[in-house]
Image 1 (tube, rainbow, N blue to C red):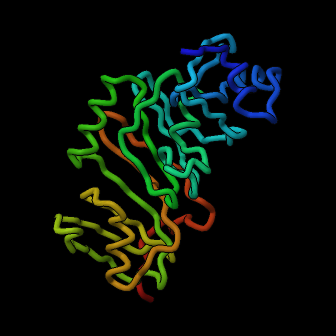
Image 2: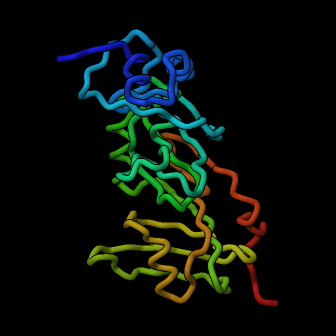
Image 3: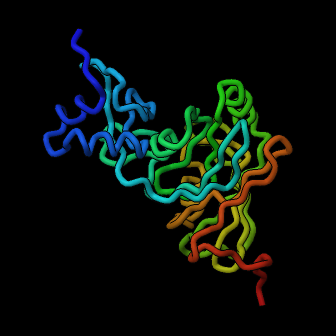
Length: 232
């Protein structure tokens, strides 16, 4: 099996990248080999190894970091994990360029911004995955819906035959939403079902005694009023 240095392999596979530039990219931890960051240009790779180059790394907002996990504020439009078309780097890939090991334990839709937690060890990944699956976490979202909500609603419409529970109340022109189940696209499906489709969605708070309270500052157009809206 033919093997060569990583910097040579990058230059061979990408005609527009010189070996010197390849070494710079490797030093910046912008090169992934089989989805893992590599910072050594002399590492040998095989023809079958997958080599990916991360675009300029955007400045991610770190919300909380411990030995067990890292929580970040995911921008809207960025996928949580790699997609099939590979046109855009995912949050998971960007974090792999910064940390030696990262484990996905939950995800947000590409169009949703806000709190995402990644485990930093296999043991922590097992604990956090179980925690997310148990529905013990308190998850609070902010949503811009059209038309705005004017009263608190509780929606229990099943999604694909499975129980789903969503609560939402108005905070000015913004809806504060809590989900008690984790069905795919649950908030969007439930609010659309009562005539209030979601235009912007942000995972605002994630709370549990084992991880504390993690809050992602919302975009300017999703800052809620300090108290629930009440009719005049």
